[in-house]
Image 1 (cartoon, helix red, strand yellow):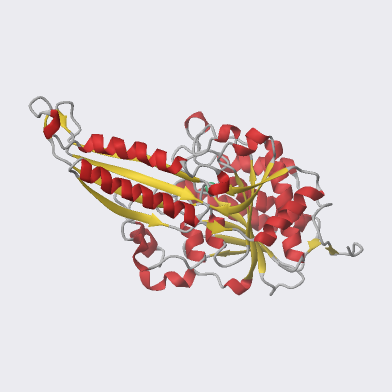
Image 2 (cartoon, protein in one colour):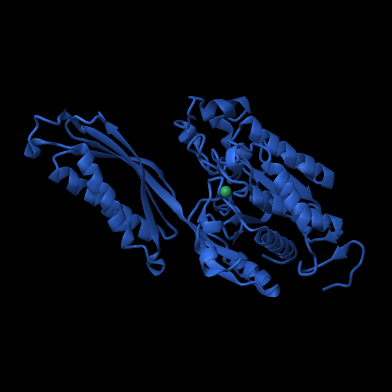
Length: 432
Ligand SMILES: [Zn+2]
């Protein structure tokens, strides 16, 4: 380590401490935007509340004196310059949009922690080898348009022509129309892509949204990979008949076929529930029944199937077994079952060097950590396509998220933010 000069040069962040009170104050302040019953927070993408939360962040960035860049969709980049302003930047952040009646921490904590880390670096006049940018991505949640990681997908150049074609919200507003209002069309989607040579790495702090860290009593998770879903609809067409006059052996009951399929999804996926075999999870989360009345044999059902894993091979095997089972049920029950694909994404491994670096940051502070995959999707999975990406988790009480009951301990939040700062400093100063 070099001797402290002005500005100071440091190689790691182990003696730079964030301001916990300021961090928690900002997190509380931003949580008041979109607050509802029982402390829920609703900031749907492109809503007034979500825009106000972005305004709050821009204001904070201005106060610190960051160089602000906002791209066409509204992703915000607040840059702290370094001794080499032209060097590729270390990006750190997450998202400020939420689901309907969500919590205060999902996404927001990662943005505010990155803000606090950069504010601390600036305040303590720490000079780094690379610039650092606090990032807020637009529209990570899929709750409004069914399209997740919208802003980061565009930054990664991972969105193509017709991808938005069916993205419509509950009021019939088309995502394509909103984007057109922002000057974004199918023809210029690629113009939002960030040149990878301008980015050195991406770091994201997030709540776990699962029960593991709390159960094993560890305050930090170091994320190795992000699971990706295969999603499809299964439409089962039987025969709607009178429930009183149709003999049992003459029925083509679409709901009983659906029931068999729901149980089969669970049974098949359970074969891959162990981590060492590449854990797979599978869910039938929605079902529509027609005609859906007490006195008719159901003639049509529509199921949504969501299968996820961090191992593509395990996930694909489970999906193939589910598909085979669907054909078997259709034949045996003399129904027609159509499989309509929604999205098929490959699981994303995060950067091994960054996993190692984050582990070392934890060890330097004597913090116990768990090396673990992420079952939920995050902006980091898009950023990983253009730059080395790393993620840290902190525990979620009872594993709950996307709910007003979402909660993380303030001590864990502060620890996460501190480790994020430590990791930012090391990525900025070291060869990655
Ligand atoms: Zn999130």
